[in-house]
Length: 105
Image (cartoon, rainbow, N blue to C red):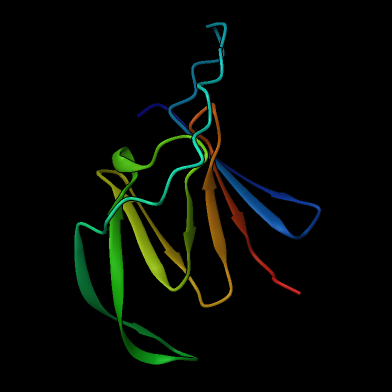
């Protein structure tokens, strides 16, 4: 993993790019519209505003382009753990970037 870039976009989306090699020509992978993968496990988690809850845990490697996850949940890989709060959604795009809807109306 060479880089992790965090960028706040329009104050409503958080986009995370992991391991992006800027010297290569990137071709997006086709997005799927199938169901989200089954969680690898369920983990007891604590959020200050919500207390304890059972959070489904998804390996980032199992997320295909176009996959949506709803919070509260956890997506993780070896060098990164993302916690989605209640009301937040995450989408994997064709370049394997992860977009998180931070605020829901």
